[in-house]
Length: 639
Image (cartoon, rainbow, N blue to C red):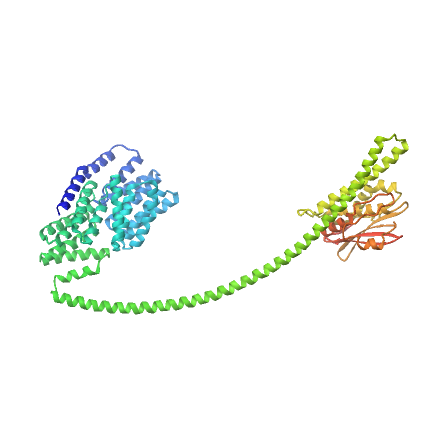
């Protein structure tokens, strides 16, 4: 007992020695506000005055907040506008008008989110927590407090941290989760002490918590601390609660006169604030004290006032509803009434239990039916998706198998091409090297020079032809080669090809004839067409002899174009003709000794496929050969 009194006196001295009169701060702010100030400074002073009056005079706090808001809007100061809106909401909350308070908190929160100001988002979320707490939704209130807490921890705003820890603890206390409530209250008190923060409501809540646990001595210690902090901060709200809780403790300890004095003091101060929440709490305590002193008439009068305020706030505890009857009914009547109420309550509980069971059973059956239906539908959809995926996989496997076969064939084809190229290039280059070595080592006559030049020309022609063919073949195998259709006049096109081979034809005394005498316009890829037709003409020139003829013709039949290059040369043996387009072959030597690469016709076949067409040959030994290119008719214009 002596130790408790020592601690009590110690805390009183500690707190009162550091306390500054709140009225001095208010007077100082008013004097500063009366001086000429910039709008931004005036807004800050108004907001500071609003905060100073928040718990002692909420109406005055509301007026200052509204003035700050109007001035902030006029000066287009968004941050000050957000702060003022929050202060208006807090003033309404302090007055007990939760609806108006929530409206302004939400308005400030929406504006803060729009301009992306985390400080005011956190401030308004914590403020909305106060509204939920005042409405009895404590879990929701704690959720909003915890939302805003990380921001204040990050920016090290210790006063807001302490406030939020206190508010979370209050939520747990209201739900009677005592251990959690004490944990958060003590965390709030630790932050207060570490950073010298004046927050009387935390001290009061600890006093209330220990009072509810029956620890009256500890409760009194915290009440003394809360009272000292309340005087310093000018927090009349907390001070009134301290008076009220002191009265409750005195009542429990049987000190009825002291309890009456403290309860009356609490009532008078609460009436001065016009805060309904404080008024109805202090009336309840005062009514209980008077009832214990057998002052039933006055007690009943205050109890009626208490119930009036309780009903207007819609926050009454059912056990307290019996208090009005305790002034009128005897102890036995009260017992009978309680017994009857208990029976009625049990009957209502049974009815609610039966109804709840039926509702739960209905929900379970409906949920089960819905689950089975959904499961069946999901299985059907899953089976359908699996079937579709299996079909897609099968199609992909077929495509992959086809591509693999084509790739293997292409690799074989390319390997063959490389083999032929290696063979055909090595011969001409070896011949060239031998001729050049002979010309360097030996003295040559004019006749020898002519022979060597003729041989060089022949070997270079071989290399040139092979190079042209390889370039065309490379282009045909490029994956990104793009077919370009354009209008081509075959009559003019044939003449261009004749000009290309004119010198070679004259040298071999071969006549090349264009059978088209008028315009014959088609749409095709000119590069592909040139490679194919030149290869046809080149092959015909290669094997034809003197006085032979080569003829170029074109026709259309049933939606197809046919271009033919025929000659009167020696023809192609049947065994060669059969495998002519299957793979690259070793070329036959022509009548001048020239030998090709053996890949020209295979290349032409591939290029024809690019036009969705094909090539074919008709030949008879001793009578000549006809090379035919066929591809679909895109558009033909005959003139």
